[in-house]
Amino acid sequence: MQKVSVDFSKSHDRIPHPDPSLRRIHCAGTNLSSLWESFLITSQDDSVRCRHTSSPLGNGAIIETSDQKLIVLRRSNNVGEFPGHYVFPGGHPEPMAIGIDSHQLEKDGEVLNKKVTQEMFDSITREVVEETGIPASSLEGVENARPAMFFFIRCSHHSDDIQKLYSSAEDGFESTQLHTVSMDELKTMTSRMPGCHHGGFGLYELMLQGLKNSNETHLTST
Image (tube, rainbow, N blue to C red; front, top):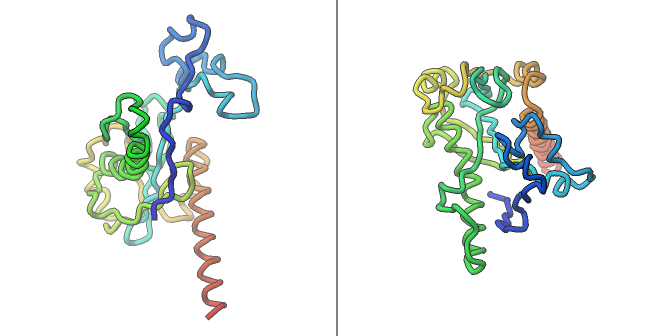
């Protein structure tokens, strides 16, 4: 079941920095700018602290194969963020995929919110297909574990098949290797992941623990 609520509103937009010299620099307001700290405001409230930064909503997927292996990519050294790091497949939802290039009329708000919600789920399947070559038809049960936009997906392919599919992945150039690893192997790799992906693994562990507790409770009650 999809449990995401979206409010696509101008009130959440980035506010341009008042300093015009900062607005003109390359990669302004992103974490790739050498002056990224200059865009932050001193505040404990993240929405206030980051009001001048560009913070596109990312997504990531923890994919389990039919033989219970987990898929990890090693990023290319030619990408801008975290070159050479281990990551889970993922990227960003794309507004243009649902025909959004600006804020629409208020009367369309409810319809747009539903479209944006659906794109959040469609986009992670699209990213997995593009980065690994796994066909969408073999992916099922896209589950949003938390609002952090990390997803759990079961794949009907065996791990031995994944390497063959990866060789023809549309966006395979973004990574140099694909690994299919056990849970224990994955634990040793998380220290070499970006913080958000390390956090995604933590959410996966919480999800597994929740399922275990639920099953134990069910067995006790029966």
